[in-house]
Picture 1: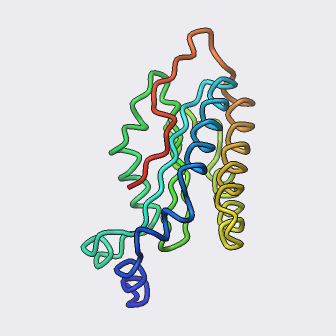
Picture 2: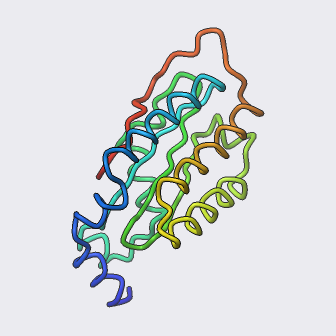
Picture 3: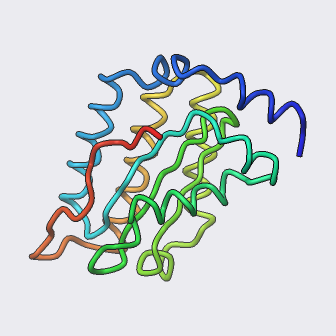
Length: 165
C-alpha cells in the first residue's frame, strides 16, 4: 500500500467531489439513466465515492474490490433478470469500475466495460466530469440495447438517482 494513496484519500475534501459532480450534473446523469432504461432490459446505477475509509486503504483495497462491495450494498444484483450494472467512480484514485450482474456478463465481456471505464477516466483527466459520465452511460446503453432489448414489462427496479457515497 502506497503512502501517497493513503494521503490522497485522507486529504480528499468533500467539496472537490461536489464541485466535480454538482446538482445539475447529478440531475443530468439521473435523466440519462432514466432515458437509457427505456431502451433495454438492464438496470443502471451510478455511484461516486470521494475517498475510502482508512482501514480498507491500509488493507490495500482496490477500486474494483470496493466497486464489488458497492454493487452489493446498493443491491444492484437484486433485479428480476439479474440485469444490474454499476458504474462506480472512485474519485480520489480517479478510477472507474463497471460491475455487471451475471445476467449481463454472460453476453457482455468485461473488456467492453473496461473500455467504457478508460474513456470515462480520460474525460475526467480533462475535468469533463459530466461529459465523461454521460458518454459512459450512452456507451453502456448501446451495449445493453443490443444484447438486452426492452421487454413488455420493463419496470424500473433500481433508483436512477446517482449514489453519492
